[in-house]
Image (cartoon, rainbow, N blue to C red; front, side, top):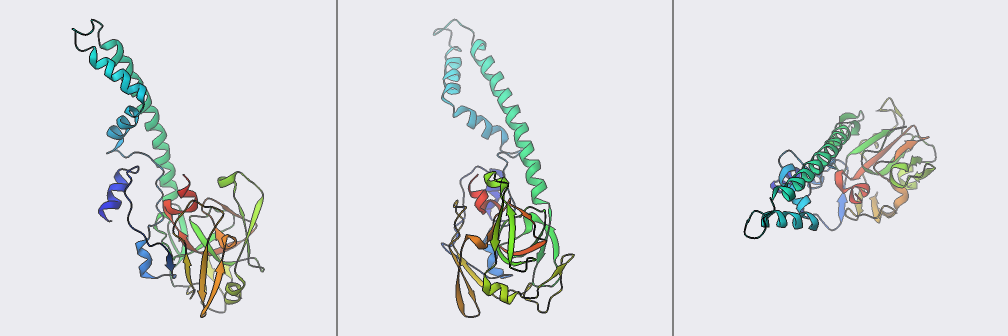
Length: 279
C-alpha cells in the first residue's frame, strides 16, 4: 500500500489522491490494471486514530461553537468578567460530548456496513473456466465478475454475457434513483457473437469456447466521474473499434432481476464507481 493510500485509510476525509491516467485502457487480467484502486468501499468518516481530532475540528468549524469557546475563555480572566467560565464552557463541553457520541455511533454503523460489503463473497473469473470466490474488496479493474439473479452488483461492470438469449440484463435501480421499474441493459452485438453458446451452470462455464474467461477485447473509456447516465468508451475487438455507451454499463448498487446470470468486466471499483463518486 502506498503512503498516500495509507494516510487516506487512516483519515478518510483527507484530500489526498494519487495521479490517474486521463483515459483508461483496460484488458482483462492485465497486470497493468493494478494502478487502479481495488473494490474496497469506505463510507465511514472516522477511524479510531482520527476520531477525536477530526470530530473536534468538525465541531469547531461551526461559528457558534467558536463564539462560545471565545466567551468561555474570556470568562477565565476575572478582570474582564466576574461570571464563572463554567456557565459557558460546561454546556459547551456537554454539547460537544453529545454530538461526538451521536456521530460516533452513526460512524460505527457505517463501519459495519462497509465491512459487510467489503467481505461479501463474489465470483470472479481470472483466466480460468471456473470462478474464484473472493471478498468484494479484492475485485480489481479488469476482473470478469459473475453476478447471479437477486444479487447486488459489487462494482460498475461492462456487460459481456447474459443468460438472456437476446443478450439483455434487467436491473433494478431503486438504490440509486428510487425507481422500482426494471431497466434493460444489453450486450454489444459483436460481443454477443463472440460469446455465442456460453452457458454458466452453478457458476461454472460450460460452453464451446473459453472466451468467457479469456475475453480478448480492450476497452478504452473515461476516468471516474459523477455522470451516472453517461459512459463514453470504445471497445477494440478483432482489429475493429466499436462504440460503447451506458446501455452496456451495469452500475454498482443495482440489483440483477429476471436474468439468471451476467458476466461483466469491472471498469470502476471502490469509491471510484459512479455511485461512489456521487456520495
